[in-house]
Image (cartoon, rainbow, N blue to C red):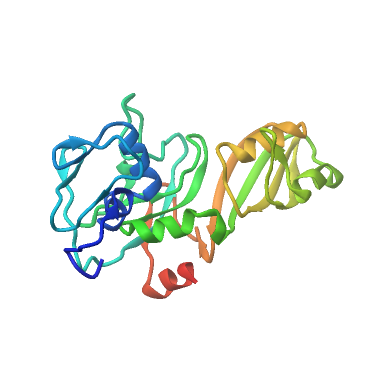
Length: 245
């Protein structure tokens, strides 16, 4: 935001995102959980708005501070396997927060990876950037290496290339190719422009090949590169610009 005060009411999800507290999608989850207070009252409506500089907003008991000059930070992180993509977990499991880089910025993950999946995920303190990356209309391509049980024949992948039907909804076309076979397993490379819950597992299960491993190696122009499990690196201003373009 250019100003810390405004005469125009702004949706609370947008304020939370622009303050770097969470993405808009995560902000909606926080509202549903009753963790967002406006002027001391629990926010119950998703479309609720506020006046910047006049109303007071808090999330999970912490006051939301609107900074007019927040520097955008983006990191690439190698999410380990058996780690959930949330900032905390009531069950006490390992979370992605345990691997965040040391920075004064309040970071949150852009999107998700399954608990037992591993690989590249982006972290940022910029809610608007996260929203752009996750919104379906931007069609940000994501690359994965996938290991399945069974020897996959190329013709079996035709349904995925046409656009798999999952949970009675047709999804966008999948770019997929067979890399190699190891014993009775097949490694494949695939690219998605959307990523619904457990999509990779569901679409391979449907064609008869249970997924055994998922590793994401690319998001848009950003590659996992030489990062090892749990490691991260800051993206350069040039890379951030490439993402937005």
